[in-house]
Length: 113
Image (cartoon, rainbow, N blue to C red; front, side, top):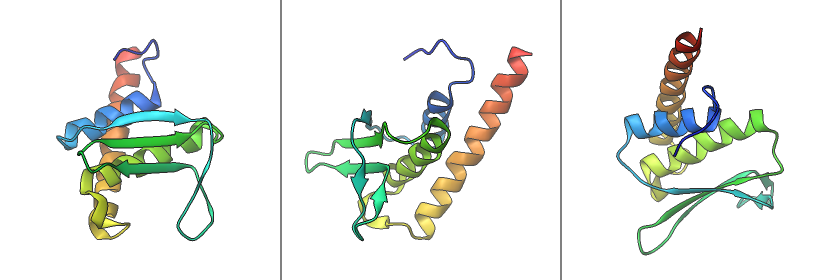
């Protein structure tokens, strides 16, 4: 998939995820928000199907700047699997994705300049 933007944040986050983990998922913008298990509003959801397919959904209602972090959050769930929750393994994956994202984003900006 190509993007016309050299600094497309979503493509860069997905590239960071791909650089670190050999996992596949389908990603989509969802026209609706979600509810977390505790009933609070949520802006992303990762669904693990029984057939092995993984769907990452991001609410189109969230501002773009917030959506990038939500996307990285959901990709960390893909990286560690359904049973990891938001524990230490998930935290480490989220931080790793964000560090790699920052690295390749700076690289893309430096190449442009």
